[in-house]
Length: 314
Image 1: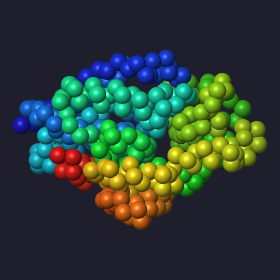
Image 2: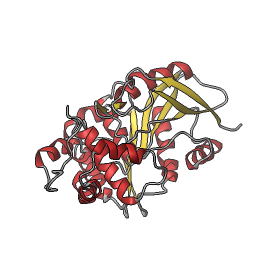
Image 3: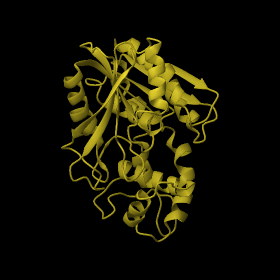
Image 4: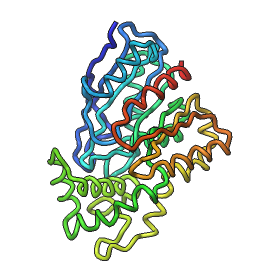
């Protein structure tokens, strides 16, 4: 029997009137076996970059392949729309972007769990999605039972700092809000625009404030000088650093999966390797893999992590 799929709508209260004006009604693509089994695991994908749920893409192809091989059991797997005008989402609450942690924890999980009668829950994702999977699970172990972090943002100094000079040049003296609005309307962004939106989006999640833009950038707009005070705020969210504060919560989990490519273009092998070694030192049970590849076109990595999560949560 083929894997069943359906699109469902959810109207969010916590995303209502968000600062970006992003929609509060979102679609969730749900994959499930033909016959639902009460108590089946719920796996939630957190996208790395903007993307709306699609029935025919590499993600759905991987799921169908695993399902045909009976490697997903009776799990319910969902792919919600988490897109923002920044083109990135770090899945935390931010007055400058939206309350995405609350959206997931307080709305999506209860909604799907009730509708499909699911049991234990895990998050999984690549890049920003991997960061979100780690961060939300570490903060909510009473609700989320495991996660798969595929080359998620970590070792921040190696990931973000190279994009700061690009962002400084790209922005110039432009108004940030106008810049974001302009780029949000483009379908094809160039590399510099992507890197600038990345730093702007990260600022909205890591260093929000009460200013007109809603956040502080990690550099001075006039001189380009690095701002240590803002960077210290960013660093507090770095998994490679804050794992020290999450030991007990991480030990409560049923499943932790980490992996990274040794040719990752954003140097994430440094942060992920550090995260892995710290977990080892703290005796936190987890699976860790390094593979011969880069940051992109790695949806097949889910062929390793999803069966692992299903096995551990079943």
